[in-house]
Image 1 (tube, rainbow, N blue to C red):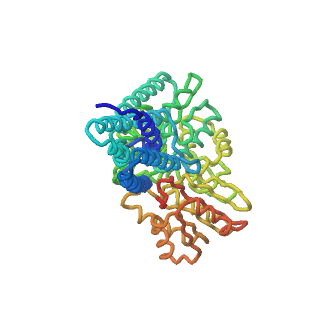
Image 2 (image 1 turned 135 degrees about the vertical axis):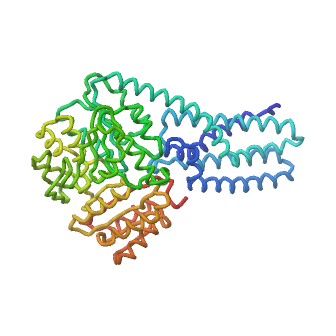
Image 3 (image 1 turned 90 degrees about the horizontal axis):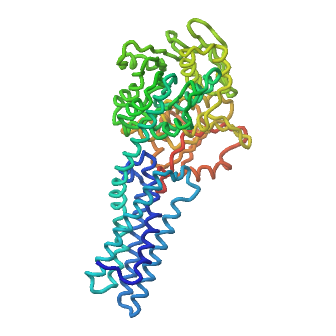
Length: 531
């Protein structure tokens, strides 16, 4: 095999093109822990690949036409050059800053990006060398570059799977390091929180309450994977009394893996619904996996009282103490006389028969439940009631989770991070409290498997008697919501948009001063129906 003179130019172009071509594929798998199979679900990638095929057809047509021209060598070179320029430009546009959730260039992402680019370049180089030897007419070697675009998805799949073997081993090393760090602090109280909804809110509220008495380290933002927890533990030292870890789960085995790493003393189970039913396959799998968190070592569990029947059958260690919190009369910690308004909430906090008045700036009945879960942990750890009540009063909403914002005379309830059925209904209940014209902007709920259409239909029915104006993002995806609205007698306005950007562009025309807008869920760009 041999490379012809000047082939270095083509090899460089292949590497640059591979770099830009890898990014949208990398973005797709980054959304779900680098699972290569995600590229088959990504509609946007299908659109890009179709565009690629069309570009190949056009440029190959031009290349074939130039075969009969005397200056075909030069024209073939120009055709290939312009083809690479067009490809690079198209893939460059895929990573514009307007993307709602851009590709994160983590160390793992950069390694994958470089590795795939090098593998693709090596493949193209070998194919070019073979073509130089086997083909009598060197003009036909240009077909290598056109064919490369067609087979690139296969290149990405193979090389991505190869590097994932290394990454899994690398991640295992991080997990073992995290486990060693947590084990090195025997007096550290380790608290784990999971559930289909409310994890981050409960974590932040609990952090606020416990800091009244203890030095607390909590995983930041929505970091709830082994790597996220590993990053947080880097800050741990002997000065901390408590470590709070949020546990996320999309598949069977995720909670078990996190439990083996953290080995918590205290567990919090916020609630269970159909969230991530698509990846869990069944509601039974969701229940079994979430309940794994209840097998704590030498501590206690705090559980939403709505799950009492489920939890009693799931605890392996019968001597584990369970504190049930909620609104039921037989709960260990409960709230009564709840008054929720757009200005906040007040309620009577009942703990072991004692009644305390509590107030908070948080809006929504579900946030009262989230506060109760935090109170359950604090009370179990022996935090005195004055500290707890002050922590409740100081609790602040988590960004994009029932966050009340005022903008240009419009009340905005930003619940864009909420994407589960229970949370959606709670957000609508909160919207009822506002004595204004009520508007909902939503793309619907996803990752609900075979139940997705039914749940979105019920969501439409639920909002029908509350809302005055509905703005739906996604023509096909939100059709079930529209049917639910109409079937329940909704007579207000319904406007449907292909993308969130087009909906936001219509705000000025649709919204009026004094309106209350609920932003319910905000899907990544991969769900946009322009793709």
